[in-house]
Length: 297
Image (cartoon, rainbow, N blue to C red):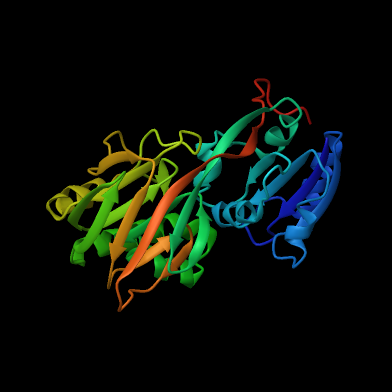
């Protein structure tokens, strides 16, 4: 295949370098060109005629690239080099990088929807979640601190336990497929994938190709249940949240922190509104074939 490698050189610790990735791809008999994800020419390079746009990085890198994808682009591949890798994991892309590269040639394509958010920031896409309350309040400082990759998940989980323990609920006006409700909530997340933030499974079964927004809420009366769940979020118990599915969601808020994927916004002093919807089958994701016999190298 003719592949354009879009590489974030800062993603993950002790991961393959751009040079090593190019070598692995060429060893797998692919033609490779490359561009850094912080290159000013990134969007221009992404419209080149190639067989695959291959993103090497974590959730933030994947979202940055997908935001720039034009309709009718080449399929998208992912080499997960981040910490949580929520997006890649939801697509079923995880495991050894070399084995993922070996599986590209025999991979299968799957349609993926985009979340669309119209709000104070304008019109933009989101890929993991758009949210209000605890996740935005707790994870914003962790994201800004740029902690080492190995510490991101435990640091994020500690920050959320502290945030859920102290924060007051927000009064949010939530309209789900035309039905309006005023809700007092500790958390509202409009999820596109099943695991959010520091690898927390808050929307079981959510996939980017299911055509819906998973509306995840936590009411004040579930605060203690959430704090207990966060002691072992990787265990068998499901998160004590309510999940509803929708095609369109509108949210009105004030004085509440919010986020779009890894972009965090402070509490606004004036009332704000956002409308979230779905752009169906916006791109195609390539899922590498799984190798059963281990690495060929």
